[in-house]
Image 1 (tube, one colour):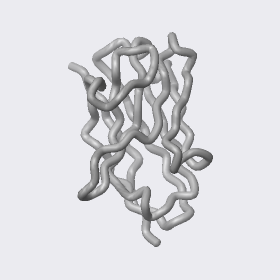
Image 2 (cartoon, rainbow, N blue to C red):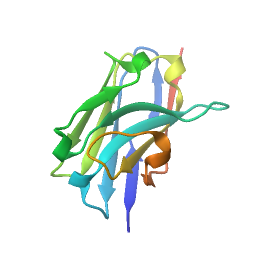
Image 3 (cartoon, rainbow, N blue to C red):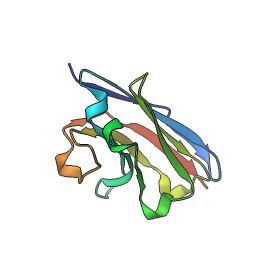
Length: 125
């Protein structure tokens, strides 16, 4: 059974930090690019960051508003991808999802096959 399980969300004050984890199982982790996405109330789901598969050299991508504040990393031994979020802002408040696409490189949202259940991140001002 394929599973992506996010954890690490919570309530934090503006300027604070959180580290999200995405634990994957049930598929060959090295064959998949893993992305982080978020969805705020009343808004469409958007891409936040992504890391290519092991075959892609672990290339990373960031949405412009999180560049310099968020860092994505992967521990292939643990089949886990992390999103370190620093200098959090109220506008980062959303449900954060991780998702996997069977591709060397990151892709657009519709092509992601597997999704986690999401973890809530709330940043207070």
